[in-house]
Length: 349
Ligand code: PHE
Image (cartoon, rainbow, N blue to C red):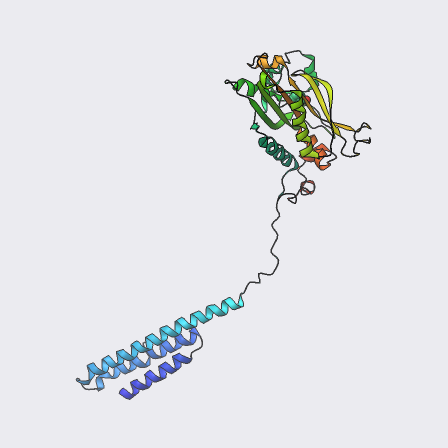
């Protein structure tokens, strides 16, 4: 009996030691430890040995069982590890293969221009403010020295919603809002970018477009002058459109500034020689500007004897068209991916 047990032990250890997969190991488990296994068989035949010998033999059988179980456990762990290694080896990912490309969007040219202008003016100490697109007649016109029936209202074909509410035709409305809100009369240095609306629609005009407005107001003794306005606009134009450009101030008329100017820059297409784009003048109009009209100061809570300042406004769409040589303004609004994807992130660090 004892010999038989020793043989089982030897046999089991050998077999378990040389098994090559989990399935084989399972078969051995059944063969040695299962209900009909060799050890169970031996236990069954315990009846044939004497009562004194039985406990000793019983514990010997248990010892062997434990040893075999232990061996099976170790083998099982080893085999599982091996199988995992093989699996990993087989499924190795080739990290040198090119990945599937994720299409990245690109910033809209208008937003690029808006961000660039905002950054520039913030660097000069300006605040960036916003105003409503649905505006009252009062802020869009009256407070800007354009009373009801004023002929200059005809310069801006508008969309009225009610008798007194309209889609703002100019961001100049924000000038009045900022002045009126500034009860302490602290110095104002603000720019405002945003959507504006007029009844126009052709290659260089759209019923909805974007403007940037600037306003600087300070005590009279600070002497905010035309020279400051010129210097500021020169920075804006040169930084945004090109250092080589020249600026030209042409006398003009706006109801809210006096004197008023229209600001032209050298035609970027012909460099000033004259071409169809600049109608052979060598200049392209880009901005409206001037010294804030005393009436506008008065209408918005400022004493024109004590305060003065300058204001300017320009169409962002036109600036974007110049900057990126876009031939038709409507391209900015048609969401054509072929157009938009030309403005990728190359120029962003
Ligand atoms: N609001 C004017 C326009 O839309 C531009 C402008 C702004 C002119 C500020 C002078 C001062 O045409």
